[in-house]
Image 1 (tube, rainbow over the protein chains, first blue to last red):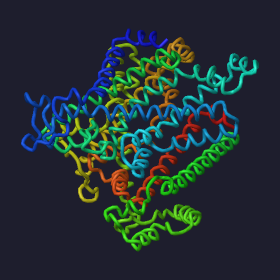
Image 2 (cartoon, rainbow over the protein chains, first blue to last red):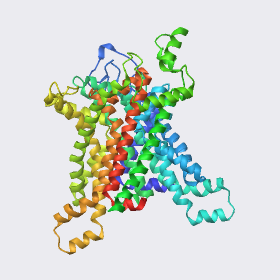
Image 3 (cartoon, rainbow over the protein chains, first blue to last red):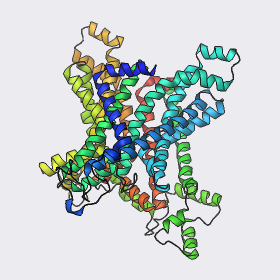
Image 4 (cartoon, each protein chain N blue to C red):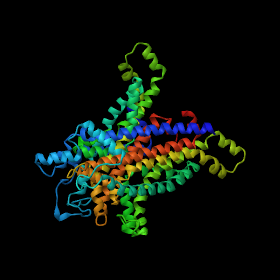
Length: 278
Length: 325
């Protein structure tokens, strides 16, 4: 099933290219530190804000650290945070959505109103709030960003569950005496999976943007640990002297987010033909 | 007419009630933050002093009102919120409301300017690509909006700064000028941040305009109008646009709401002294009263704007009024 979907995704050139980009990003996230030509933390005051050279292919930053090495090393925290956040949001959001779509009426009411209220907070604000009160670190950053997207998953899964529950095969299952854990795990969940997969892809892209936004503000990944958002934030101060310092992390970030979004679009077209009409 | 009025006011009352409940819950959430978050806020605030004296801790506790029972604190908090009293900034004792009063107009100005830019770019782009569906114009504008949604504002902003400020020297790269001191300079400094924000927003507006227009264009009544021999221009301007307007207005309203917190990155990069700049500063310094006041103000604005959009929606589309009453 998943192989078939992958094959179909590869048939469209744009989606295929995006899959290649994302695969590269994941590979670099795993092996980036080993691939890096220099030590990403090594400060060299004699080589501050340099352009590209034989030693530093993409130049150096304001402390003389090798940009290429920092770019490669900076992928891992971003990928970890965005995947962790998506996983967190998917698990808790889907659980809430199941409660909202299949649970007893009072529970469903409170869950969905709670979700509505969480949705009142603009995402970056919610993240900012939590970051302000929580100790920093990759794990807590992932949880904070995950919390932001829990209501989105809850909404998507609730509406899917509410639709599936009305189908005759669910009623049939119930009539045959199936218990609710069985109905949920064997009948409902597999049938609401496709919108959730699409939502997860789009959430990864948004989480990457949110993490880099927080790091840009200096509230995400803490230096000297490199991250793209933080590099972009620092590079703004050296825009006139060293524009390429800004260019490379920006290009990597935009390309990654664009690719993930395009894969999400492709998946949506494949899995949910009704949505792709527009 | 009378029925229309009653159903409208019923809708208004219901929406208003929901908004009040939301506000109350958010106020409670913001209050409880001090307690549910790990770490003692007093210790954090006295962080520069590695081993604060018990007197200092007690003084800070009473300054923040933390020495009273939780329920008393909660009651005081709600009472103060009703009077727009958000307490005092921890570091200088200046009332939080004054900070908010100075930052809020700047954020609102930036948000409105950005929305204006987004509408001016997004709506015509969406209309053109819907009317020329499948042509290169459509392909270009659709891909521009996909890219626009993927590029973070701070990258877009940096591109604008490099182009318009460092290369062409048309506009200042960042900063703020008081309107009363120099109105021309004030607007010159607004242009880049507003375009940076608005350009990103225009992507989803043009997408929504396009799909909404396409939806209406495929309706039976448009075919009937065409069969009657009405000119295409008249069909589009008089009939299609009016019917397509509701989702477009909705998304514009939602975006305006989102901008209440969403200006944060652009404010930071252009040194725009708005509410979000204050908030980021307060968060990094752990100035809790300012954080709470700022968050509450932004959330309240967000709820109010969404309420306005909901009501407008009911006003624009008679079917919604009927359905809900």
